[in-house]
Amino acid sequence: MSSAPTEKKTVVFLGPKGTYSHQAAIQQFSHLDTIIYTPTSTIPECFNQLENNPAVSYAAVPLENSTNGQVVYSYDLLRDIMLDDSCAIDGHRIIPQLEVIGEQYVSITHCLISPIANINLEDIKNFKLVRIFSHPQVWGQVAQYMSKLKKQFPDTKFETIDTNSTSDAVLKAIEKQKTDQIPQTTEILNIAIAGETAAHLYDAHIIDESINDRLGNTTRFLILKKLADKQYPPQPPNVSKMHVNLLMFTLELDDPGSLVDVLNVLKEYSLNMSSISSRPYNSGKDGRKWQYIFYIEYDSDPQIADIKTFYEEINDRCVKWCLWGSFPRNERYYQ
Image (cartoon, rainbow, N blue to C red):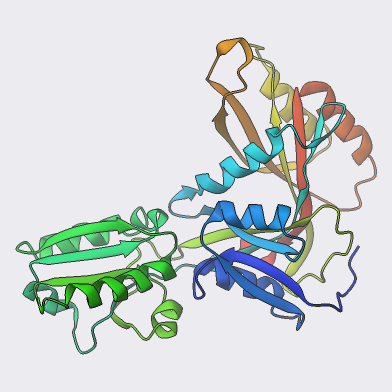
């Protein structure tokens, strides 16, 4: 199934460099010396570059976090690509131009990061306004910490500002601190919540570390390639023999038991479902806005003998369905 690529291959990730997405890409491809790591500004741009740029071979995109749940940007992009009219259709099956070939789990350890050297956490009390920059997904992972911070410094006003990524948050804090100091004010502090790697990469300073509300906070990333590219990169060494399958599907409206019918196919073939979720979509059918697309993941032996008949039964029970990929389970899943 895999052969070692000899030419240079580009993987895109949510940048800038130093993000957790960058770390996911490195974990997937660090055993290869043919990979070029290229940051993008947004998650949609990762998908767009992989779909439309011939120079891009792979993408690493976040899918879910163990504390904060779904990364809805990614779920909705998978939904929109599947339902796009340009996808190939085989019966009820939708065949997108992209394919999931792997997964990575990145441990998330957030730090409070300052562009100013020689200050510590207690120095926050000296500022009237503290702006904190970070990615929107982060706020749910540090909610308790933020609450404690505000109680610890009741005379300081705090503002939270969203950025495209955690590394971008560090860059924004550095840039904003420089502009705020032009009138020589010392009343405003701009800081970021990001990882230790981003702090070191951009010469910023950690004033508090491990500020996650929960230990073991982890984000799961998907690794995608172009479907037309038949050359699979060698998998990293820490993958198991078990495969994960990402299946998405839609059902007839108001059809009682239709979801159970699909799940019973998994039971019939002794396939363990590891997750199920849904997202709304609007097909325009009958003018109804509230329809749902379902995402399920199930484990399987890659050598399952009757997989063809399994897909035939899925096809019979779904209006539209899409297998995004069957890929090795990363051993970090079990840790």
